[in-house]
Image 1 (tube, helix red, strand yellow):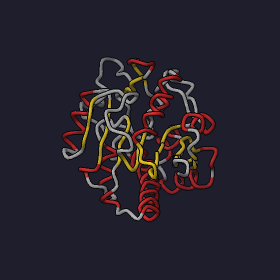
Image 2 (cartoon, rainbow, N blue to C red):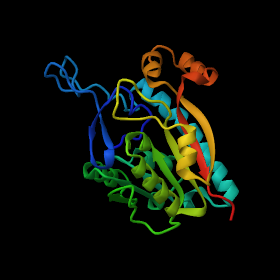
Image 3 (cartoon, one colour):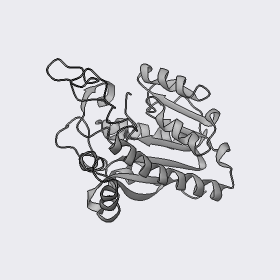
Image 4 (tube, rainbow, N blue to C red):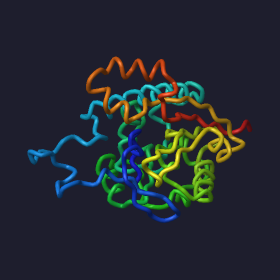
Length: 261
């Protein structure tokens, strides 16, 4: 599943269908015969998903603050050092999140990922060679029960249009998560009227997918169309809007905890 892990993936993008009603998110199609990787001068501009792009960097940093806090709290609560935490990413793409996990101390050898797109898993293996990266279906995970401390997904479920496939993926995530582990979710909560190939997933649906596990929600991420326009002009204003205008936040950061044993 070629599923971009960053927050802006589902907005202003086209998609191509794969199996199970899962859509692969693609960049905007080139116009006038010009490559989407070139500007009018033949130079390659930074991708909207690259940290060189101000809006992508803004959203990445906001997410990283939450990731840092989540890892720290999880480490303290389990009395387990961050380098010893094992993490599986569903729909790992080219491995960007695994790189970010390492920024906060997670060891590459304790990272794993799966994606249906072999081109992207090849990239992930090159970026994080010690990680256990597999090409395959997230609805049929190849790992044993209770294999990971944290199971993570970012903008995967919004690209799965088939309800039964969503349930299968959620069940597999629960299966491979340890009894005192954590499922971590980052995905957008609203439909994009310009893109019928992705569908937002709200709190009620998340609760239903992972019941009886306990869900703790935090609404984050300034709406990407706003962030793209505003951040290059005023980082301060973008931060102010995200902090003080919750209706402009489009994604859910969700910690999903197993029921007490």
